[in-house]
Length: 115
Image (cartoon, rainbow, N blue to C red; front, side):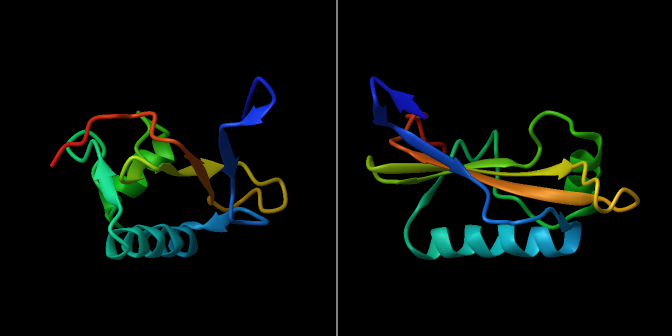
């Protein structure tokens, strides 16, 4: 995203095509684990806890309710990442549930931490 010709955030997907749920959730859990081990802090943990491979999360993602697949991670005052996993209509696989992971990195835009 641009602000007066300056890039202030980047949004991307680490995928070249949407993945089956089991494959996508493995990537999401691995990313969260890497960030946690590197000292990144989950932002707004009470409202947006770390994602876990549960039937409840899978059902929420299927129904696309309330940003169920979104978490925010922060490295001090330097960077914040929004991680999102969502159901995605894939025309190449119309009979399969496919999921897309997106990441956005920028200076922190959510300032308060919870535990």
